[in-house]
Amino acid sequence: MYLLSMKKLSALVVITGLLLLSTIQIGLAFTDTDYHSNQEAIDYLENNGVVGGYTDGTYKPNNPINRAEFTKIVMESIYPDDSSGSYCFPDVTNKWYAKYVCRAKELGILSGYPDGFFRPSDDINMVEGLKIILEAYEFDISDTYEVWYESYYWFADSRDLLDLINKDVAHNLTRGEMAQIIYNVEVYLAEPIENPTPDPSPEPEPTPDPPVSTLPPYSNPQTDWQVFINWMAEIGYDSSLIDYYEDKHSNPDPEYAEAMNAYLELRSLAINDDSFFSIYKNSNQGDQINLKIIEVYPTEPGWILERSSEFNAANQGLSLAEYLGTTEAFFATSLGREINIEVEKKYISYDDFFFSDDLYTTESDPSTFYVNGDTFAPYAVTEEFSEYQTIGTYVPFAGRTEEQQAFFVDPVLGPNEPGAVYVFMGGITPDNYAFEALNLYTLSVGCVGLSSDSYIFCSDAGTARTSFIHEQGHVLRLPHAAVYEDTNRQLGVPTVLGSSPDWPCLVWTNEFTHRYSPLERYALEPYDGFENEENAVNNYNEHVLCD
Image 1: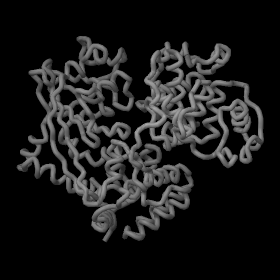
Image 2 (image 1 turned 180 degrees about the vertical axis):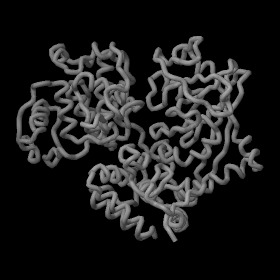
Image 3 (image 1 turned 60 degrees about the horizontal axis):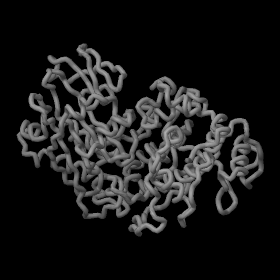
Image 4 (image 1 turned 135 degrees about the horizontal axis):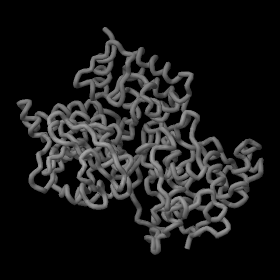
């Protein structure tokens, strides 16, 4: 058993039994956590007074959290009113966080770095945070690995404590993930796994080393920002673009610089897994990147289907290869690699997946629909289907429950092909309802890209083709080009991932709507470099600048 002592459990601010049996009220706590993958965990901690938001009502779930803040939250959660001390590390004096850090050190929860420092202002990475939490909860973890963090990692992974967490050990935890780890531990304590998967052998088979990045390592924001500015000048971006970036970065609002610096960290991130990010970043010049549009059709008869890629091509007097070729060319310029896109058809039972009893129920009234007992208003449909009544199915993917997530990753739909876009082709149900495979932020047609799973989902084949490069940016870990999704605070020059109203001579051609900005391209550059860099830079300058 890996439970807390009864004394400590009774003192816990996060009361496991009470909260896990209650209903979380979605969307009431913070203005920026609706449909976030860590929303349930954030609400759980907020309802128990463990975390708070900012004065503007936001929580900023995607922001990093530093070592001092993280330690305070853990200590206040598990040891309320039991923290004291100061000057326990050379860099921990008598500041606000000293009592939490020093009490945690006294209890053996943390020990600092080998050089004797704690570095309270550094962002905390996944395994550092994981160790602190597991030690604070007094789990009995065997020390059988040469690398210090592996015992914590495999213990947590085998007990589902890393669900909805980026498992890259060097990944800096976000505020949302911090809440998620604590929540996952609470769920486990309430219902421990009887026979968890054994930890891997301490002597696993050797795996290939990840590629060594030839890019400059991320060191500090100001130094790396100047490296980026120098890069823009060296490869030929116009000085007006450079000046504009500099002005944005020096905005009096420090969050502009924070958001822009995040791209610099992404640039040198080395990952060796099956994600599309890894496949792309590790590709060599001359390699071809293969992508798919996977059209998912219902096996049940009587459906009126959405227009297919083949139909859209024929409607323009093109072969399917010609139709896809334009998108391939746009991709090739944006990503600096040869791109090949194919269309594949897949057939699944919509009744089993979209209308299964535990996920979807409806009553005779077509003005509402129900997901897991919650009622949602219906969404608009395309003009083509306007004569039909409307009924939807799922809440947006980012707000999925475990049951909904199980649907999307079901082996009948998968296995997932990194970088592919899945298009749900069901249009009108046999009962004459306009069917939306995904309720994409109140849009009847649209796409959503998920970097954690390398998934893109769309509800229309034509939209899939035109939105491919935008959603692929999200799969490659790029956010919308605004300060923490605030569309009123754009980060600069025009990009397919965000508008920019400050360029009066901008020419929005079909070609240019598929362009990433210089900062985004800098972040995404493969370790082996781009192909045709000069062409991409000249093309960007021509579309943005006045003659």
